[in-house]
Length: 172
Image (cartoon, rainbow, N blue to C red; front, top):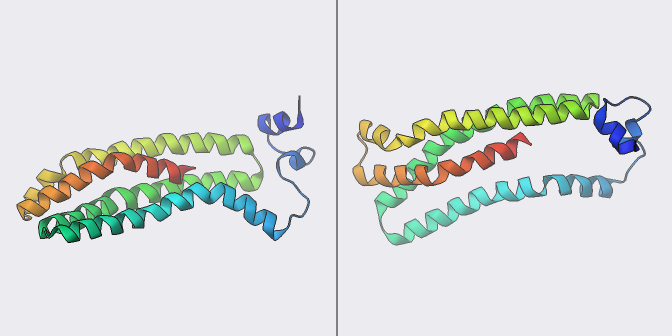
């Protein structure tokens, strides 16, 4: 059995801690490189959210249809309040267990909690997705302007299915 297999199968002990966590001092540059490699895709994905929001506003603003621009705002607000705020906070809460296990050095528990987090965030997404199916009726019950409500509902129906990827991203 290799040293890396030992570290993956059992909790870390004094003897095999150096296999998984290098105990020698590393330079700031090396630490930054390692952190960047891990965080690169998450940062890139997070940067695209404001970018596509800006592009949406520019494109719809040049169309001249105020209902489309208002619908974009309504849909983005609905997604932000109902799905992103609740879903990401839930994902952060589930992820705190992983950081604690990392501090303990128990890699197996990290993987267990990560899988649980992915599973629970999928269930949370389903719970958050169900009301989004009826968002057009909800907007109508609020007596919002019909054109704006239609665009808002269209935005929610277009964006909401992809938010599962965002929740999974915050689970890792």
